[in-house]
Structure formats: C-alpha cells, structure tokens
Length: 404
Image (tube, rainbow, N blue to C red; front, side):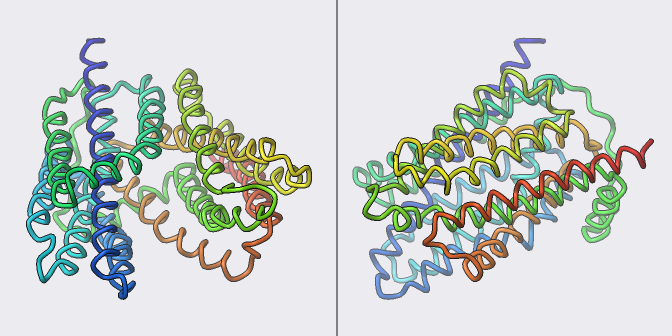
C-alpha cells in the first residue's frame, strides 16, 4: 500500500512539473514569435495575453462541474492529450500567413483545456493521495513548481535558440504527452464514496456548487479570504518591478534580486512546511498566521530601506515567499481534505475564478491610487494584509460560536 501511495505521488509530481515546464516554453516561444514578427503591433501580444484570462473567467466554473460529474483521472489525461495536439498543430502554422491568428487561437484553446484541467487535477489529489499525506504532497509539488518557475525561462531561451520556435512547440507537445502517460499510470488508493449524479444542466450544477459553498461557512470564508489576498497580491506584483526605480542610484537590478529571493523563500517554505503541513492543514489559525507574515514582511520593507543595505532590503522578500507559500499550501490542503467529494471540483473552480477576477481589480486599484515609485507603498500592501488577517481571526471566532 505504501509503495502505491509513493508511486501516485511521484506520478502526480512529475506530471504537473512536466506540464508547467511545457507551459513556460509555450509562452516564451509564442511571445518571441509575436514580438519578432509583429514588433509594430503590440495589440497582437495584448490579445494573446488577454485571451487566456477571458477564457478562464468564462469556463473555469464549467470545468469544475465536469470534474465533479466525470471520471477525474480520464479528464486530466484527455486535457493533457488535447494540449499536446494543440502544440503539435500550432508548430506547423508558425511562419505562415495566419501566424498571429493561429497563436492567439492556440493560446485560447490551451486556456480552455486548462479551465477543465486545473480544478480536476486539484480534485484528483483527493482520490490518489491519503488525507494524512496531502499536505506533504502539496508542499513538494509547490517546491518543484517554484524551481521550474526559476529555471524554466532560462531553459526556454536556450531551447528556442537551439531548436527554434517550431522545435520548441513540438517539444511542448511531447511534455504534455508525457504528462498524460504518467497520469494514465495512476492507481486510486483511496476508496471514494459514490458520486451524486449531476443534473445534466451545467448552470444548475454550478448553482448547486455555490449553494454548497454558502452552506459551509468556514470554506466560504476561506474562498473570500483567498480572493481578498489576491487583491493585495496584485498590488504587490504591480509594485515589485518598480523596485528598480525605488532603489535607483542605491542598488542595481534590485527587481531581479527580489524575484530570486522570493523564489528561494518559496522553495524553503515548501520544504519546511512539508514536515508539518499535514498537522496544520486543519488549523485555520496557523494559516492566518502565515498570511499575516506576508503582511509583516512588506511592512518591514520601507523601514529596512532606510538603512540602504541591499542584503537587508532583500530579506523581507524572502520572508514574504516563505509565508505566502506556507499559506497557499495549507489552504489548498485544507480545501482538499474538508470539502465534500461531490463538490470539490466546483469549489476549486470558484476559487480559481474569483482569483482571476480579483487580480486585475487589484492591479488597476493600486495603479490608480498608490505611488508605484515609492518604497513606502509596500506598507499599504502589508498593512492591508495584516488588517485582513486580524479581521479573519474575529470572523472565524464568530463562525465557530455560531456552529456551537
């Protein structure tokens, strides 16, 4: 039994990491092609980038319904095979007269595929991994994802330089196919309860999922919390590139160093939390504690900046990465363990949809009302998260009292 558990963990890790690397190569190869051939038409790149967001908003909820009503393993395999086919076909349309249309359409189709894949994959973990190992599984998965996030763009540059854009897209097709093959080898190790058959009406099933979420006050609160966190994360992501301007004349290339420190923090956070995640996944207050840690780290940045020491100024970004990673891992693990099996896909699809909606709201809000060139603006992000954390504790206490 233990061997079966570890086999599933390895297959899921390798499958997700392979797909992530394929996505990075896909984005880089297509972006390079668009910039090279349509340098005077930035609208093409804008359409390419926005098509993914629009598709996710429209189809994420549908993907959640399918994840709950269908065979999750089969659905994940099929979506990866479709992703491989999309990359394969696109590779033959590069350099053609309709290249721009083909790239935008392929990206939209890939976004559609992953609107079904993402909630299904998150739900599939419940079937393939024992509950007392889900926290550990998510921690290692996140650590690997962070490492690929760092090395992927660098490897993509070399890959495109050696085999060209067409070769890179064919490589993408292979990565998605490998992911599908790995997922085919998964064997269910957890006996799942029989599923409640859906109504065969997608809208009705989505409404049922929302009703379930509203009835589960703590889970509903966590969904709202994750949405509000994404609002402030959008502000953080907006401010981060401006650190080169904030520290101009003091430090060189601070933005790239801050990104690296955040990623290192994410990896360290994943590895550390892997030792305790399964103990903490049911403790929502520990989750809130890590969330407040991200806010405290950002509150510290403007104060440390006064010292004008680059190494000290980078520490808050590493701490931010550690705390945010820990929060995300415990949140995902808690949802995977606590939500009714029949609604797991829909709950994850709602989380993803709300996140996609709140990120642009946060970006536009911070761009309009915050001075992006001032290091003090990080205090607004940090202060907002700390206030959100404190409010969360009071709300959770109220929910617990109401539930008796």
